[in-house]
Image 1 (cartoon, rainbow, N blue to C red):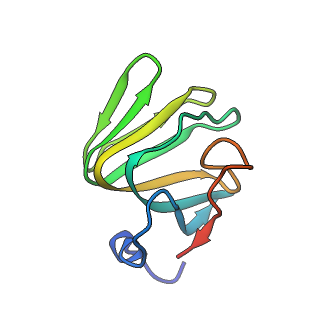
Image 2: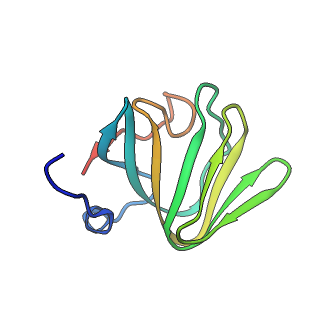
Image 3: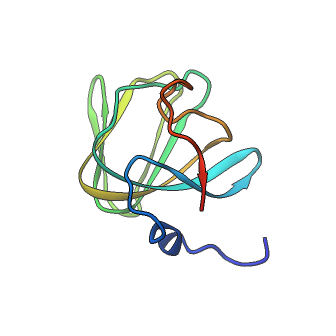
Length: 117
């Protein structure tokens, strides 16, 4: 990689929610940024963990038995196979890392298309 990547600059290039943008890749994984607001769908990933790092705002990750609340600079990894639903009561900026091709809903039929930024 020739230059550093500013996640804030990448986030400034789009406004839509729940549409992750890949900023780089490493070890067959996508490093993405996304803006979220409102409730996402309940889902799980059978083959991979789900990594969330909050860059701005506060995010609730609802699990069936509890809620994990994250603020800026905090991260949480949802273990594979665990149902969860991210909820943002305000606009939240996240960094996500997952294996390339992982559907964000856990289902290829309903997943958001991958976009590069």
